[in-house]
Image (cartoon, rainbow, N blue to C red):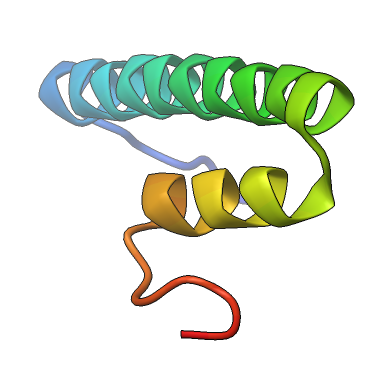
Length: 63
């Protein structure tokens, strides 16, 4: 097999993108934990509406 050549700047950029994706994943996990806690304490409709708000979606159920 032939050799694959990758520049150091490309590797740095890839690492930076991975780190950014990891940060976004952590933020999404935190949002989901908050929504799950809301579901346990306030009921399904409120949890659904919280999820929609976190997801940036429109109006509430039944409105």
